[in-house]
Image 1 (cartoon, rainbow, N blue to C red):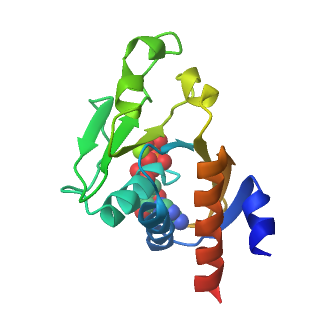
Image 2: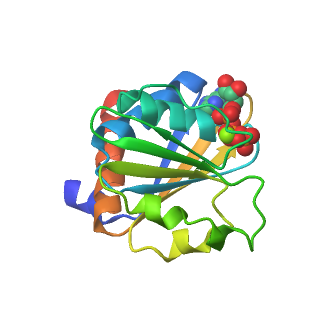
Length: 169
Ligand SMILES: Nc1ncnc2c1ncn2[C@@H]1O[C@H](COP(=O)(O)OP(=O)(O)OP(=O)(O)O)[C@@H](O)[C@H]1O
Ligand SMILES: [Mg+2]
């Protein structure tokens, strides 16, 4: 069974509250490795920043991320890994290639998380990516689809999926 889960690329999670999404993100934060890139997609208010907060808490970051309405990127210092939080909401498609963000993404001892990362097409050209789609599913319910590309990302998503299922029992 373990092997089967590892081979999958897509994992479906359901959360019923902000607290549950924080918990799910915390599992990613506990298992994530250096250099991981995560893209968060989904409509306004669906829970992308909440997910980033959960990641930051698990990484023991110095501050809790906020919706960065005036900045495209903020760095939160963690105990072992820093969290680079990008929010490209206000970015036009043709602006993304000129921001030099790739330099941060390759930086040692950090992970990079993108909200509204679609203009940054180079995100999707990478060999390793965790791509997360958030959907509103009525009230406080959210459907969270995690797609993993590359061996490291698949391993991470598979580990979290197993952890999540174990906690649900
Ligand atoms: N299951 C859930 N998971 C996450 N957030 C939830 C959930 N249920 C309700 N919420 C609420 O939804 C809101 C999500 O806000 P958040 O800022 O994370 O959205 P966002 O996707 O980052 O939006 P934006 O595109 O504007 O950046 C919060 O007010 C949170 O309390
Ligand atoms: Mg947000």
